[in-house]
Amino acid sequence: MSRSKWTGFFLAGFFAAGLFGTGAAAQPRPQPAQPAQPAAVKPIAVVGAKLHTGTGEVIEDGTIVIENGLIARVGKGVAVPAGAEKIDVKGAEVTPGLVDSLTAVGLVEVGLEPATHDDDQGGKDPIRAAFRAADGYNPASSVIGITRAEGVTSVGVIPTGGLISGQSAWADLAGAAAPDALAQSPLAMHVHLGALNDDRGGPASALLRLREVLDDARTFQKNRAAWERNQSRPFSASRLDLEALAGTLGGKVPVVFHVDRAADILSTLAVAKEMGLRPVIAGGAEAWKVAARLSAEKVPVMVNPIEPGPKSFDELGSRADNAALLHAAGVPVVITTGDTHNARKLRQLAGNAVRAGLPHEAAITAITRAPAEALGMGARYGTLAPGKVANLVVWSGDPLEISTRAVAVVIRGKRVELSNRQTALLARYRKLR
Image (cartoon, rainbow, N blue to C red; front, side, top):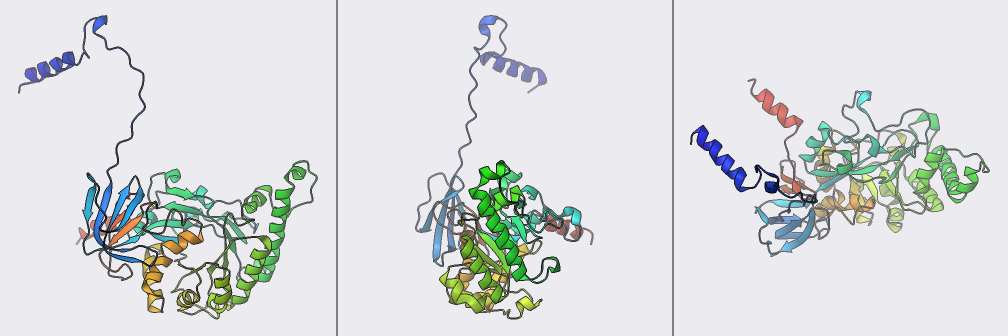
């Protein structure tokens, strides 16, 4: 068709549509603005895989139906809805998205460059309860893509430094902006005990200071009006810190105590009970020694099964089968890397816990359901169950085998890109040979 013919064709179209009239009578009547309608989201059905639900149950040849970002149905023989995008993964294995509960992914870009750190308030004040990891979270961090490609879909990003380090946040490793990525903040309050920090003494001294601040927070909460009139006694922490700590009293927000020695764990549990806190133990090198007490009080323990130790006198009783012994005693066990750039190795740690005696499905639970429940997110995350956020991973084989790879990662019901900075570097330098 010649140019003149194209011109005639378009002009005829404009006239037919009434968009190119020559008089007032030909003008279209203005219409009120209509709100934009969201595009219909097509359901997704993942079909034919071996499903590790995160509850200990394994379903062979199962189907997962995802609708509007949530898991709608799970099971064997589940019908695929009409019009759904069907993903046939027969022979593969599927788990809930992995959760690393103690990391600085999105907070620390380069470990040796302090200018890239947003996980520490800094300064000498050990009380930093008002400090929020969420404020520094960077969803564009290059570490996120690398971590996500290994099946980690959610992280608990934590603050460090001081005695009371501040508040952690739950982030899904998708979304281009922080408000999209962050699912919960505050997630937990973090308290770092131990004998390594000389400027605040040992754990006993730290617990004394902690008890003092918590007592101030309780007094502040009950007498806020008197404080506003300047009619209260001096407090040992700032107003913002006391307000933040008030959220932990009564157990609404869990408190993660980073502590290793068995005796210190027992002292911590006593303080938590005295102050009405909901404790979670992190580190817990000697937690196996007090497993019966932890089990009786249903206190979760976050451990790194391959943490080299002992590195201090607090960890003299550390052993490789810590997670297995805790699980056998009935303690909720969470496996975490406690790392940033190695958060991608989470399932490798779980595999090592299996080698040391932890049952296979318990290890999968320890990196999916257990961290979600320990941090109060179990109603939304951690298992393949109807109503849960559709975070899941399709694996080429046993997810705890080092040679297995993530074939597909779904976050909030959408399949995410697995390429990252490392794959880009591989492609770049492969061409230089």
